[in-house]
Amino acid sequence: MKIICEKSNLLKGVNIATKAVAVKTTMNILECVLIDATTDIIKLTCNDMELGIETRIEGSIVSKGMVAIDAKVFSEIIRKLPDSDVTIETRQEEESVISVITCEKSVFEITSRKGDDFSFLPYIEKTDSISISQFTLKDIIRQTIFSIAASDTNRPMTGELFEVNDDTLRVVSLDGHRISIRRIELSDHYAPRKVIVPGKTLNEISKILSGEADNHVEISFAANHILFEFDQTMVVSRLIEGEYFRIDQMLSGDFDTRIVINKREFMNCIDRATLLISESDKKPIILDITDENIRLSIKSQLGNMEEDIAISKEGKDLMIGFNPKFLLDALRVIDDDEITLYMINSKAPCFIKDERESYIYLILPVNFSGNR
Image (cartoon, rainbow, N blue to C red):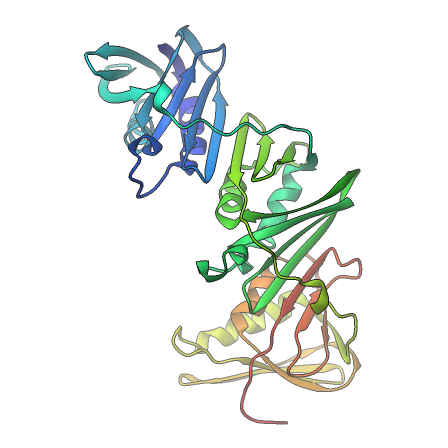
């Protein structure tokens, strides 16, 4: 095999593909990046058996072939080469394959492996697919990924529910203390489909997406896998098995208190309050809601803070406490200038949502000492 690529094109492809390199594996081949030039296209592929990424790059194929090179070494070499054309060719030496990487006066010879040994990506038949813009998918991930569970204790909660129903896609994440929901309208009608996509997959996809509104992502579903196709890249991920938490029973439309508040003012106030909280001192922020006013207060070992914010209110007065981080996480990803909070009592979840319910954030309250 012999190929010639511009360093910038090669490095971009390497940076995309290597997001799926296996970490701490007993299968050394999974620590490699596959360079496949067996057709008229140069493809770079990495696969950790849960997540696989294949991306195409521009370049000239002098002679066809493929080779698997240690991804970490290859990535570092390419990154530090001069900004010029890079030539990669292979030769067979007894039982091993040698990859020769040349750029201007730099020449590296790397012991490599036969491309045939590589674990190729599973084939996904593209008969069950939806299409959305890159901007929308990147936004959906940004607005939900923060509330997946960090622990594998309940594995489905480490992923996000992708639920297709006719012309609607609903994406849900939860960690036992809060729920994040984004709902978007699709440009067509589709058969019902419900899958759990690993959070790791969505994090990596978000890093690769350009986020352009005019560029689309084709999402295809299979029995055990999901495929994302965009630009010159394919991302194949194994789905998480299991039953996702039934959230609809928690999405009550009843409320006794409804407030409308300026999002930035609310967020900045909470942010200031967290200055008095250390990581070990998990004190709640208290919301004391009365007519046309909400008083936010916090008491910690470092001191006390309180601040008033004007609101528009319907319903009963209420005093309720929250983990300030959970409130901030939701507020930071909402793009509206004003937000609406719906509450029932100090023991029931708080809902932050817009009128169309394109987003819903459910946050469980926390107990606090003291009464109004």
